[in-house]
Image 1 (cartoon, rainbow, N blue to C red):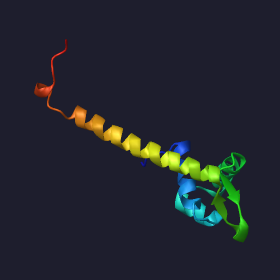
Image 2: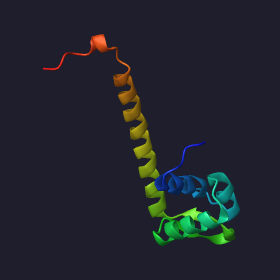
Image 3: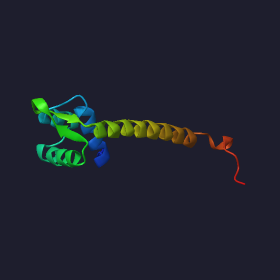
Length: 101
């Protein structure tokens, strides 16, 4: 079985697809959501002012949506760094660790 994505990850995935403009079917396929679920998420992000339905029947990011996407990318970068550092610490041989004080 595959990993389940968090709600935040799904919203971020929608933002990645929509950043240069995308139609509903494109979003649905690239984000891998059913039509019904995509409708719910699009409603949520549009009500939050992150995405708008623009010309040419496509969805685009608002300035607030771009800010969200930039913030999410920074969060993801830092999360990966911390995860790598934590894994490095976990893999240090026990004989190199200092004894508790």
